[in-house]
Amino acid sequence: MKKLLSITLALFICFSMFINASAATDNYIIDYAEKLASSEIEELEAYAARLENKYGVCVMFCITDGTGDVSADEFSQATYSEYTDNENGIIIVHDDGNKTYSVFSSGNAGEVLTDAAVDSMRDAYDMNESYYGGIYACYELAEEYLENGYSGGYVYDEEPVKGENSTEEGNEKDGVSIIWLPISLIIGLVVGFLIVNGIASKNKSVKMQKNATVYTRPGSMVITGSADNFLYKNLDRTEKPKQTEKN
Amino acid sequence: MSTILEQKCPNCGGAVEFNTGAQRLKCPYCDAEFDIAAAPEGNSNEVEQINWNSQGAQWGAGETEGMSVYACNSCGGEIVADATTGATSCPYCGNQVVMKGQFSGALKPDLVIPFKLDKKAAKEALKKHISGKKFVPKSFLADNRLEEIKGVYVPHWLFTCDAIGNANYKATKVKKWSDDNYEYTETSYFDVYRSGNIGFDNIPVDGSTKMSDDLMESVEPFDLSQAVDFNTAYLAGYLADKYDVTAEESMPRANERIRQSIDDAFKDTVKGYDDVESQNVSMNVANGIYKYALYPVWLLNTSWNNEKFTFAMNGQTGKFVGNIPTDKKAVTKASLLLGAGIGAVIYGLMWLIELL
Image 1 (cartoon, helix red, strand yellow):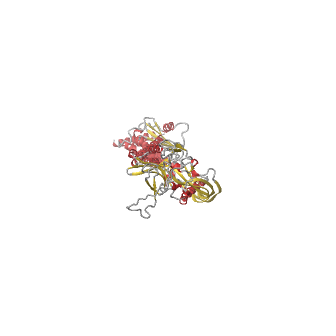
Image 2 (spheres, chains in turn red, blue; image 1 turned 90 degrees about the vertical axis):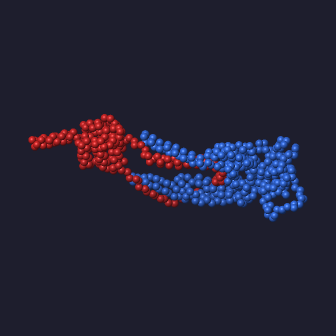
Image 3 (cartoon, chains in turn red, blue; image 1 turned 30 degrees about the horizontal axis):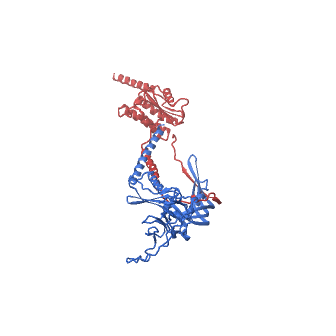
């Protein structure tokens, strides 16, 4: 009886795994721009599959050189729908040609992968110099958020990533860093000091004349000799600051 | 005792004064007016010797140096004046007197520009000058008191010449470009030479040590086309000094201004460069002549917080100058407020640009 129970349980687990495997998507990484090697894609796909199996959320990433005739929103939504049937999921589309991002989230994914979470994932992607490293870092963060979200750890944002089937333009602005506030203030103080002192200097009107130009006899100036001789030249070469491949 | 001159009215015998509005001599007592050319010769008297013998202390040798003593023709009062004083008023009767010897012979000015603006105009100009300024201490506006106002003919030397100049300049051209990896800056250096002639007419240099040079140069320029031949009648009613800085002593200042003018004028002909720097300017002067002229200046002395402030107005054109104290606290406060405002606007614009 025990043996039968064990066999039945094993069959159930295998069946469950089969069901889960069949529900999982094979295309989590859509590389239209051909930025990734096949081995890299396989590794990332495996990571994404693991997340979907564990948390039931499909996390897709797409790199493209353009969105064709459709908008970024339409493109991300269409791509998500094309490659998965999972109702709970998210796709981050990086338009490498236009240097923009778009995000589409579906179902309950937005409750865990909130605005702030998606932003940090995108930042992690941006900060990596390689596409593979960026997407991998993105998945690592997604896993952390999903884990904490499912275990009731902490809330990343009060508001989920839009409602079901909603889209968000990926190039949303982050605002100006607070570090610019004191810099702006210093610039303002310097400019203000110069303006005010310029006005105050008008209180001093007594000064020696610089020259006697006002007493020049009209039309009396004649240039009798003129020469412009080249002496030498200096060439300075400065290396340009290096930019990352993506930026 | 020296000889003094008083312009007397032939009608009533009162002392006449030069009237700026009418540009003629006018008697303040009977309102009679006279042309300068037809001005009465004045009563020039050799002052009689006073035969009183003093029992008190006598001036020692050298003690009266720099002083001159005159006797007023109207009241006989003794006028003690500076050795350079050429015209003043009697402290006893108020009559205007001219020390004739100060402008006689070789000391006679070639030209004089008569006053065109009167004392009232000078007072109004002072008010306008002070009220139009920012960051002036409020107590200065309230408590500043006009202590003295006087019209002074200031002696000036006028220098005319043809200057021949040579100048060298260090000029640079900067060219920038870049490729995929580097930014390039190419700086080319040139030695630029210019020589030429420039004529200068009547460059004034203050010939009085009593007047501050910067104050006198600040009220420039004067319109010399309105100058007339010197006549002591123009001095009636004003103060006047004879020069105590000679033409030779004034020449270096004229040369300095000529040299700078040559530098500026030649530099303007150096074109097509990103930067031009003067290296060396030399000059020679040909056909140099100088004249002696009296320029009309209103001097206004005020006091505030036990400090004296001197203002000057060009008695011909009305140009008014004079330093006004600045409220440093107000300047600091305004700098901070304006700076904070500009800083906030910059930060706000950055946000706006970011959000657009």
